[in-house]
Image (cartoon, rainbow, N blue to C red):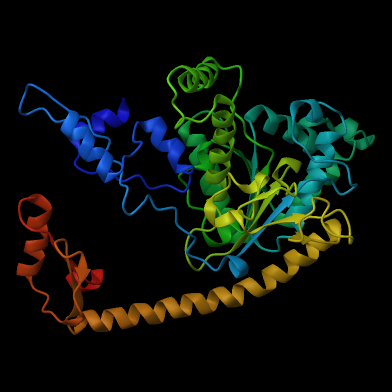
Length: 437
């Protein structure tokens, strides 16, 4: 319904996000399942309508070139460290499910594991995303002695190790913040406090939730997010009426209407978790000169040894730029417990060593990247000042050879006129922005 209204009002709609994949599923959900040019021609021949002004309801998804699923702008081997962890330091499985975190020992062990990862990130901010607010409150209550125990209880030593978890976090990153619920004012205060703490003290930890305000729409660039830790799989509430209805709708459409373009209800439900993870992962690397570590903490993120197109099933729903770059943490020095050679050996000690190497090598590489970008910008400004540039013709769909082209108001007016009047043949000038100032 939403896309139908847009099609009636807009000539072109561009969808751009890091969490649109899988593209076929998205197109089916929005009613944009495209047809080949031949199929569209046949559909128009068979379509009849009485009103001459009425247009056939064609699904105009771009087919050629096909929808773009781009690679990342950074050198992933040198600027990103992506790790999946499926076990605690004591070797027991790390699987964040309700049946597991209801056990008394699970949440303290999870806190110790998170603290170990945080300690291996030497500088900057660390974002820790958990599946829900209720689970976040439960963890903070267990790890923070100021919320769980009174002064007398702490004096008597009744903290079950929670004090050591919170103290480890504070010693490592000076301040720990928790995403608030409620008003926009509280959210903005927490966001600003986090950024200010990093600017003044060089580090901070922020605990937040998937699908929360902190996980979407905020750019934690550079030191604001040198590490992102994703805990568990953020499945939607399976008992919610809208979730039940959507799962049943997809299954019925596939069964009764042969809608093979729609995902089965179970797959659609699983995909929502990975879309939320993709949003959280995107908080880390924000530009070509950025770097950081991404840690997926759950055994379901680990390579199960069953690759499809060189990507294991556990990683197929991750963003394209990350699928081939996730390394699994092995239990010991004997290789990967999940059967893939692409792993970090040596267990948790090996992870710390790999983190140390990464955070020593990434900054010099990034400095070179930024230096090269600055040189390229200066070259572009020089070329623009000399009036050099290309022209792109929509008729030939070709860039003209580079040559001297005067930049004047008439050229700019022409571009603006093309944008406002679709009957004029499209002629777009490609030139650096600084040339139009």
